[in-house]
Length: 149
Length: 286
Image 1 (cartoon, rainbow over the protein chains, first blue to last red):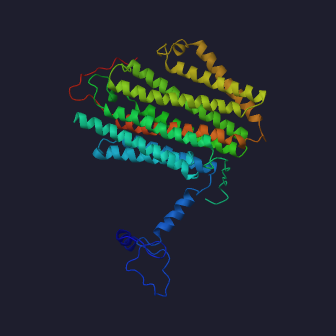
Image 2 (image 1 turned 90 degrees about the vertical axis):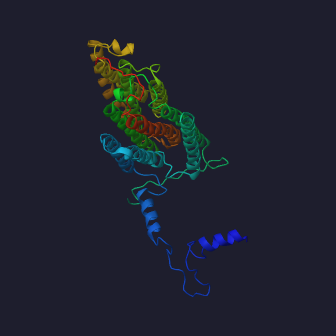
Image 3 (image 1 turned 90 degrees about the horizontal axis):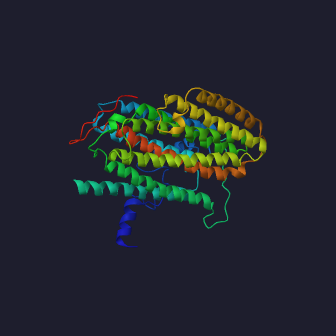
């Protein structure tokens, strides 16, 4: 094992649970590593369980579930229009609207287009195209502003 | 939400190298390419934002309340689409078909809003040739409208596919014809006095428009009644994949509009005359 790999493993890996543990537990220690050991404790496990329950995991949802997603989309659109009426938001105006727009985008793609439940290959294909699209978008903007000052 | 509240979904393993359906995979690849397509046009709009020196300017023409309603309509069409797929998957044909037609109807209403908006803008002096704002705006929203139109035609075709018997097809034709007759008469009512740029709408005034409205409402009720009575107990889950692919396209059209609504309407709505621009007076309200 190379030096860099050994340093990397020493810093970020532990023999149990894939958690980094400082200081390193000696191998002779008779006590097993506690569950959910790590800087965030059980928080991530609970968050993951909650997310799976709320987003119905790998199953298709019921019509009521879709209706709730529709209601959330409508509320976000209402919030966007409400934010639009404020003139005092200044520099927060554009980022706020973009974040709300992104939330709607994710809700539609994840639940209505079923990427949350479907094969991961579809997510990778769409994600790849999306990233190239964003890159083209940013490159065009950067090129124009560089040329025009 | 309980386990029982959900329907287990098992995708059939296809005899392909990926184990996935090739048509669905192709649709996702197409949508990924369409992201780049729209990304380029949205970037072009932003590049030329606030660069036109001649009016009308965005703050003089963009109508946020109207576009908010049309955005809501398109979002709800996405909800109707996913409910249609759910119905077809569960072999509930009448329910699935009702939601397919609702999706097409909401998409058509969105297009009606676009016709109304474009008509208003032309009357206010904004055409694709007027200035940079007009060119980039009409190209982007026009291309999106074209996508929506293709989606509506595709959905109507899907409604035809799930209605194989003559009685169902008569009901379908009656409902669709009734809906578009109603929509045309409503547009004619909005553009009172032959104010529309579209000749077919401007000639529809007075009694012809009223007769069209009556025919439309009767057609919708008659068609929907016939459709509601037919197709119970039919197996439709084998058509789910066809509808799912159409649905992916429809939802994509929706997410593109989510971005357009934010970037072009909400963010740009306050854009006025840039430094060095020529003041523009809007024509008197028609």
